[in-house]
Length: 388
Image (cartoon, rainbow, N blue to C red; front, top):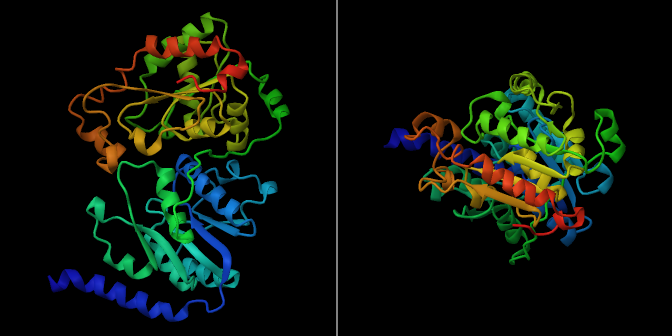
């Protein structure tokens, strides 16, 4: 037992020693928010960031992320919400990380938020090196994860809640800062480029449907609807005279092109041809978006573009799009959602699902098509209101 506890005790001792180096005259209106997470997860963090700025217009907010996964498609620099985005790769050498956090001290950051799913362990150490005096973060005892040393880091530990939307979990951290329960607003944000951007792709505002047939950089994932279902859906949409565009990143381009050729579709392949800001603009001006639980889904929700989101194993309570223009179609199998409350990762679902992930095929083409037809029959103004 003593052998197991020794590393924990050593970590706690080092953290206590690092407290000596805290900044004595930190700027109270200066904040750091780690964002080592996916694009969709970061978008769900934006209600808290916007609320922080509303309550404190003079707030200087710094984001710390591992790579340019799309932060540039979330906050427009001209909006003045974010002061600066720092990039620090998790794979950077320890010496580079140490130097970064030492240099960060010059910003005299007063508060850091440490979200449970966006703050790798080196960030916890780094904020101590940076001397940030107020450290508000989640504790994860409810998940059965023992991280006693992180409690030594936090000045305000906030228990992680289950059966809760991710945006609410971020609001919990902000509530601790303000020492009161704040009104919850769930409108998210995603920046976009001028409407003229569409012309480069042969598109016109409100004249096309975005359908996301790919996922996870074309790697296996349990979230994806069957390819044959997508093909049948798009065939029907094209029969109705609709123009369909297929987004995706460079890794997914071959899959998209092969899909179009295999099923002899007229859809426009945009995978690998757009930046994240460009695809955000394309999503913003679409008449409808159909996709699974993904970054595309959260961009559509942020722009309040009419959206049909297909849910299978993933936890709807945690990630659901909340705009009135968003509609969720979820499988009704009794095991759904097996990923509820972080019970399983996508990889684990792929490994041990006893019914071969039948939840996604259980969502029929007819069900999705009927909803799509209903939305497309509405006026553009009506589509932007609650049709759920």
